[in-house]
Image (cartoon, rainbow, N blue to C red; front, side):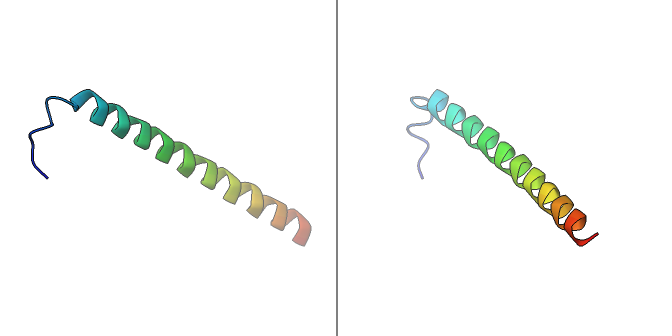
Length: 47
């Protein structure tokens, strides 16, 4: 990868990176919430 297009598409890259970071964070949070909810349902059914 060359750094020729860095100045031209710097805003696009940063915007894409922030979007990916936000999406990844939300996916991580949602997966953790789903895991906790699933564990809670499983525990209540077992008890």
